[in-house]
Amino acid sequence: MKSTQKILKIGLPKGSLQESTLKLFRKAGYHISVSSRSYYPVFTDTEISSMLIRAQEMARYVESGVLDCGLTGYDWIMEQGADVKEVAELNYAKEGLRPVRWVVAVPNDSKIKTLKDLKGKRIATELVGFTKRYLKARNIKAEIDFSWGATEVKPPHLADAIVELTETGNSLRANNLRIIETILQSSTRFIANKKIWQDKWKRQKMENIVMLLQGALAAEEKVGLKMNVSKKDLKRVMSLLPSMHSPTISTLSDAEWYDLDVVIDEELICDLIPKLKKAGASGIVEYQLNKVIP
Image (tube, rainbow, N blue to C red; front, side, top):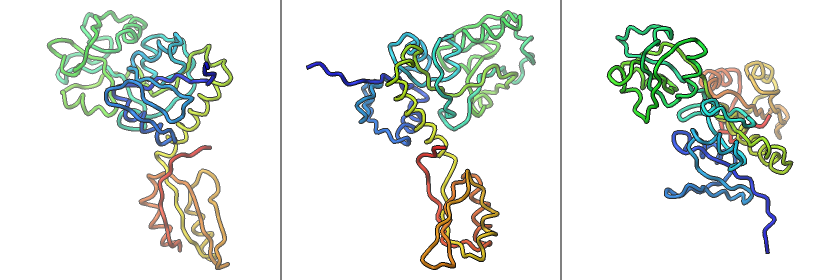
């Protein structure tokens, strides 16, 4: 008997984004098993079929409909000029939760100081198409070579400059390179095939996935705090608590005491907890969050 079960085909980025993407999906509540020899991660959600694809190729497979949707960088969407539906921006990368940058970099002792100085020069990069269009729009003629990797080591002997992806700039500095300009800022995007996006069931499935992924990302930089506060100290403690909304306040069996529960930015914790303690809070418990859904 032929199965009528609906399936959403999703592409997951293989390579530098793979582990951070799988971690994000798992935090969002999706159970995924990945064999070291397989390109087909298995979701316990049987309505999802997934495949590992290089981020550089993802957009064209989504555009063509081979995949219903996928996750890739904004940079690779721009590189391929793919006509896809950008469902959501997901601010995570290989090492952190910030956008990455494509930069023009040259050796520290290079005479190249600005983009205009690249005229007639040789540039190595993986981002060939976008770099050509970027320089052409500024009337800068240069030779753009595709780099198969290890791009940072190519100047000065194999290239005068490079256009390279960076999160922190540490690798460029380690290779005695300096940045002269950022030409593109990129973050991970959840993209969909435009025709598939019109399918009611698949659209709802994608929107649900995106909501849970965004909730998991929002929770990455936040923590929950619980504490007991006496009635006399409540106003003072409340004045110290930043929150997404008002803190949850519950009465305890002792009518003179309350339980407070609040979600705050994790970066505030070290400064905040001593102040709360001094203001009269007790039994302070910090706990991690899986998802924060606005």
